[in-house]
Image (cartoon, rainbow, N blue to C red):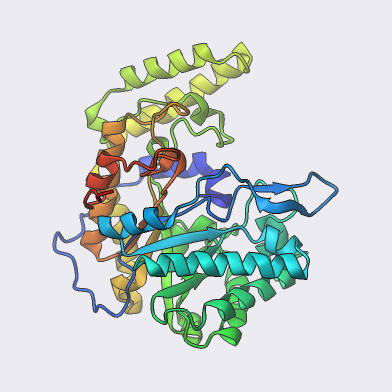
Length: 421
């Protein structure tokens, strides 16, 4: 949920809203071979994220480097995830604290990561460890680490990938996988990204000959990044899986997101799903009400933001996106897989979700959010794709950060069962 998709998002949103509603995927899911254990998962950010880095010009972190108040799943939480019907977690890991640490601290951090993987295993959950650089960090960010093989810190990042692969190599063979990069920042058809990916996969394979590795396309792992990827050269790194992220249409999934740089999203709320469940007039009235509460932006800035919001919402409501819209998008992935002879169970939708309305955020109406999540999940399953919901915690979560209660609407939307305890 970081990097590319948070920067050039508005263009993606408009493209998504205006994309033709392609033919729906077949209703019957293609049979899975059962060779891969990853079917239904959840992301566990910010377990190894939300850091305490020192400001520039320093490039290190306070110790311990992770914020103590961040929500971290307990063994009981992991057991309940398994009881709900999930079979794996995707574990995002910020590499910055590891790369900035001295030898002793780095060993401690690796031990912490190993213990987290073991805790998930103890709960009968598979684990995809995802090295997820923080785009908001002033030094240890994607541009400095994975923008190219000549990036200032690429060599150290590459070594870290090899170290993590080595650590995971003998842990629960077949139930652990490594995803070396989150949401590559390069463009969809970039010639740079395949070189970066190949170098990282080489490092991983040097430490772990049989560990499953996740590969992806450029432009933030979006659908069009994966479909632009040539998988043939990646065969040298088998066993491999493929992954993509899905948040289309962003006007729905990211409404009200305070981290978005585009001015449209700040006051955007009450966007319905499907579009036919509401109206342009009602949504614009909600946007005006939010803008009236905004005391930080000037009237001129709010007028400009409102004009742009009205424009993109007209596109959204004219397109009337619904389940067919999602099916059309995922059909592009299915067609790409068919053209390259890739079984659908090898393609994981590694992130999907939408921001909720709660005490912190004014975003999607919660019934609409549940309908959207259900539609995306069901569309992925109809195509035969495994999935990992974003997120366990925070504004896109399925669990309350403090009480650890599961959200019944999200449990139902994900086709899970409410666990006891």
